[in-house]
Length: 71
Image (cartoon, rainbow, N blue to C red; front, top):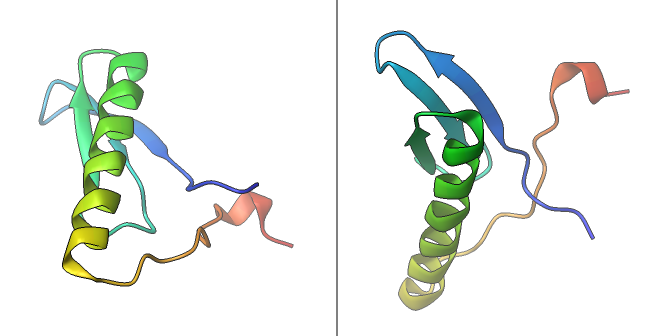
């Protein structure tokens, strides 16, 4: 089963780590550590998917892959 790709990067501006899911518009989270950012984006993903289902919106399939993994 495939799942959504998650990017995690350090943000000097925010002073912590940002995790985002490119396939889910505006689905991101902040954490003081990469692990915390990952935990928070998992919560954001669940909330994003729940809100989309409740609103009857289409849920995009996982498609994003970083360039290094594309063939």
